[in-house]
Image (tube, rainbow, N blue to C red; front, side):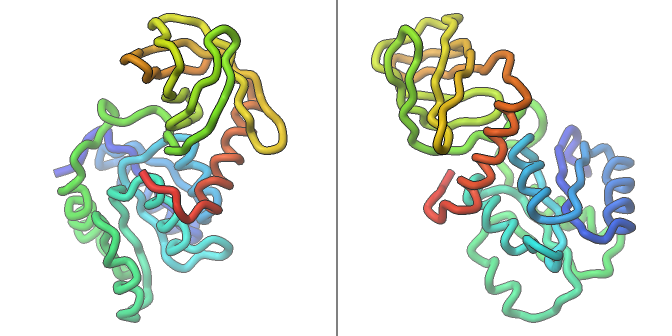
Length: 232
């Protein structure tokens, strides 16, 4: 059994093994993206939410343990496979608190790889493209201003849009200019209300510049990696 349309992120510093995993998972029907280290893996996850992470434990720079801790702050139930040649029991103990996580000792076969995937995905309540936002949404509390609808309180924010509490209900289809206070400066973003329930509203971004996307991505990276109290 494979989880069709499931998006998998493979984080592995060994280029040969990374290529083998990408080929096997693609052949099995998964949508696969890869990264050679933890930092790039975290940025890839910020760019697009994934259903499953397969990561090496020992990597230069940000290792697999640190990457997993950051990812689990955003999605506590995210399925994760850790591949490692280490056998210390302390490694397993460190991750027992996380659900949907399995350690896969190296070397492993295609069969044990797929068994591991089935194991960590079995308890995932929703998976697949139809249940997944195009981009990661980070839960936070952030005040912002709009052009004609007053201040809003952002509840979650991603590269494709946001959800916020608003002072006055905003009708679906309303065009907005949002001033986001990002780091020392602020950026102006055009958006459209795509859903509205009383004082809660969802807004989709429109015509983001490459510079705006880059600013948001690196800001998200800092939030996830520097905020120990972040929770889904």
